[in-house]
Image (cartoon, rainbow, N blue to C red; front, side, top):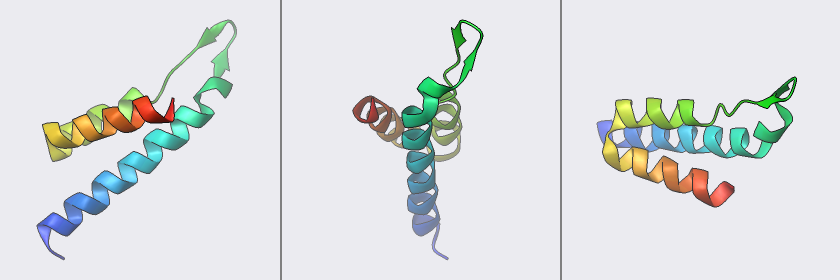
Length: 65
């Protein structure tokens, strides 16, 4: 597989994870605390694929909110 194709597929998978975690994130509660796990795939995606991917994942986080 081409490296560009791997990058696009990886960013797509991380985008799907961000959207799902954003939609289901309000249901994860520990007592009175609500923990947001959405930032984990954003940070990992930015570390693996660069600042452009991080910006895209942040945009997906903002839109899905």
